[in-house]
Image 1 (cartoon, rainbow, N blue to C red):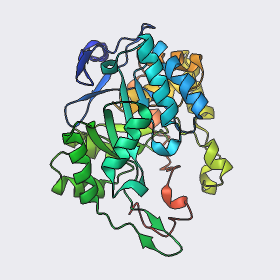
Image 2: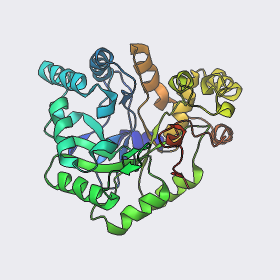
Image 3: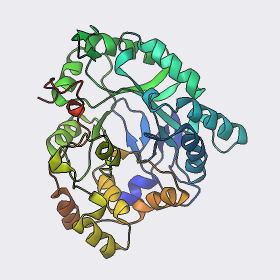
Image 4: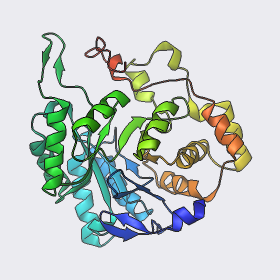
Length: 332
């Protein structure tokens, strides 16, 4: 069944693609809520400097990857745009073979089209394949309690207009609680194509996954390896989560030994079996090659359940941990 799914041809950016990489591994395609398709595995560029992002784009394409995820707040869209143009110029890839995602930051909720055009200019593209609302909360200044008064309905209306004008192929959400997702469904003309949530074995979000599966809305998992070193540095982690280290977890290490794989490969294979989309940060060629090999083995159902059993409800990237938002009951 898995092999059949991986070899099936599906649309990428409106074109047909088997997902076959130049290195001989298949990256499965996932169907978005609007019928378009997206590669299941790609390159995440969070915390990448401009130089790192520029170098990694070429490395990703040469390794067979086609999905690139970024955001204006990552500070690397211009470098990614330069890298994309260089790769297109060299004939390394064609535009309809690659899939680029970006996001709407909270300060741009009242001017979505301007934000999209700014990202398009930085990325040097005519359209963005998937554009997501980065956070569902409005912009808030804690000291004065000044709130940018733009409703979610207005933001989504602007997103739909950008899609209708061809600036965006698919529109989605990120960090969107179920109750907010339901609200969007009450007024939208185009339903969100995807929800991008924090997801890893320490935070499995089983109920949310079941909900979106019934709606036939795919979930993209950010922080798929539960990496949180930067949060430790910023002292933004609750004390109970500071010792969590998925790559050193006894179960993950034992399974890595059992299957002859790395801990990261075991965890990403678990994500793959849950039909998620994920874009871990990769900076070395061996990381690209290693992650591409997660599709050539199957974890047993028993081992998949054991990994899911690691759940600690550990939301590592909780925005209310930020002092500016700590008084907002966002996740209730």
